[in-house]
Length: 227
Image (cartoon, rainbow, N blue to C red; front, side, top):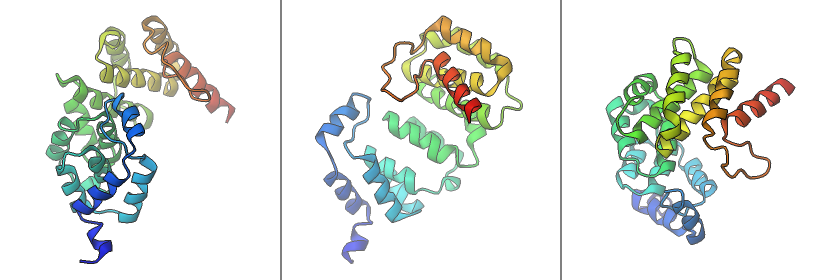
């Protein structure tokens, strides 16, 4: 086997990823629950070289290694996953980054997004439920027809304050997306955010928008109106 082809096997790619490990980056990532130390720009460069390789993606995912799974999600073909496969993958995703990329790079781009949104939305596992809320936020932005937006605001108002962290973040995003996308519900969305104060004191780097919903809504709307 040529050296180039060998590098495109699962063992070869895992060795390549291991060589990119940065202990300092791993320490930073581990504080967020992500057990890898690979620079994501370098990981994306590997994916660009590989292009779409769905069978390879399946093998990479099966390793259980976080960096390998992130690479898998960049080279997979989303429409080839069944609903059952995606459900299993979400429940075994482990790290927040793998969970996030799975939802954004596989579920949202495949044919099962709406079915999984409905299946996950009220799941007893708050991490799984957070994926349902993330998919709901996507619908708020792109296809709000048929959604009970007032019902969503009711749920957020009643449950977000005490929700587990990942679910709370997903509900907070849905709150902000409703406030941004729907002028008629904007005042209510801002009011809910102000009363609950979720993420009000979240440290935000300069030139970044705060995740606190009232600020997020106001700043995004301001930019849209200025464009």
